[in-house]
Length: 178
Image (cartoon, rainbow, N blue to C red; front, side):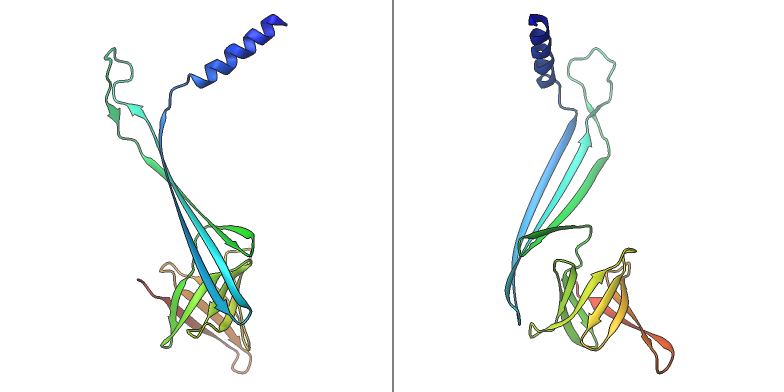
């Protein structure tokens, strides 16, 4: 029994003696946004964490020199965005919340529990966007349902089928860069 206790103590103490072999830099940015709409006032809490990890590598690892130079190694960056709305936290890959322009009208996209909500400039709810299993979106407004996706520039492209003309029309919401 005494041998087991001494062995476990030695093992636990050896875990704390290990040297650090990575440089880690973490930055957390929290943004609180209040949105007023016809349903009342909602508070969105957006937390972005950017973590940079760099392995420490030595130029002359096998030499007998006491002070060794550090070799440049690649930095691995991971970004995580968590959105909390009404007490429900959702982790998303890319946040598309921004202002978009279509035919001279400015729309605001904000995240909600299931996707995005689109608002007109007067804070009136215009439409909702719901994510599908293949990273596309279903766009639903009062009188229209469309299929949409974000292109490489961050613009929202909506494709709608018109059964009267038997054609697919395309609308592009252009993201407004700040």
